[in-house]
Image 1 (cartoon, rainbow, N blue to C red):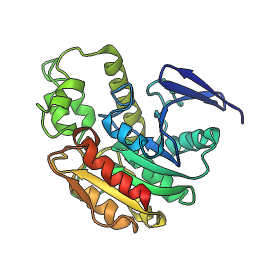
Image 2: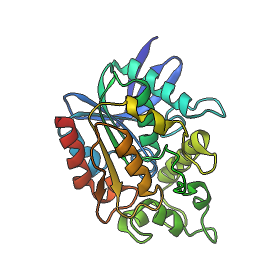
Image 3: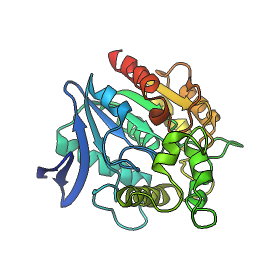
Length: 279
């Protein structure tokens, strides 16, 4: 396997097995891979946000984009979560990452958990923020696909309320405005929803029924973080992750935040992850 790294402004590209994978990188030290969610870098924002900058002050932060997102080459039609895992295995190999810390948010948290239970020897520390991926009876993940369709053709209030603490939260309005927004950000939002539809468009959405029974395999130190007002992924999923991951301890709830806690409370969430990386 050959690889080559190209750079265009802040976004870098690694070529592996005939496919290009885009990523952002900042900081020095032990590597920490970050897998993004919806309201996140690559999911809507084009560069690192304050949360990522704080992490990068203490680690070499590497944030690749999911297949079909933010310049990363797509996979074939109809792929699922296993294909996303192998996408990242190729990325890790191309980057020479034999062992690393792994943090994931929302759908990226799901893929991070799948990697950790399959390859625990490669993941030194695991951090999950509002992660999808589990099936919890009676506590279904909300239908984000329906809410990506604006009401009356222009109003994204229900989508904003799903991802943030409220529909009127400043960051919600900044990244998910009514009507037409920044074209690059709209493109990234569409690409992220498209990726999510490939891996998780099966009601009740964005889950692997087997994952909860496999969490015991991931014995590394872990942290599970949830927004107090997460209306996308019920808190019961955070409790299930914390209970299933032996190294996680108690679920950490971020007051006043929604699913995108890393955007709404960047210092609080980054401090939890930095404490994890010190263990």
